[in-house]
Length: 105
Image 1 (cartoon, rainbow, N blue to C red):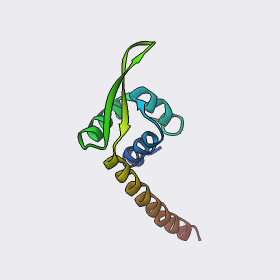
Image 2: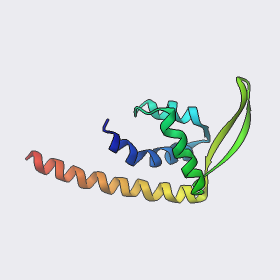
Image 3: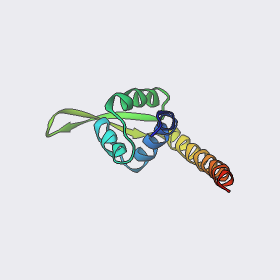
Image 4: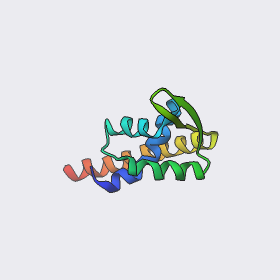
């Protein structure tokens, strides 16, 4: 997938996943990687930025596999932003689809 496409949608994808349930960083990478090729080096700076912008909160939870894990949860501001981004994405996709279908005719 084109790297510019990925950059443009990762914020929305992370917010959508966290709207479903709280996750730790590697768990997000694993979930996103099922559909979009990304690395841990991509997700952690994004999570930091989203937290700095107050879209996410974090908390620590004990892990049986070792050190406590930092979990991310979406905030009310994050939920509002997710809703806005999803709507913008839908409008964008509809617009691109019209152009692509028109160019194919």
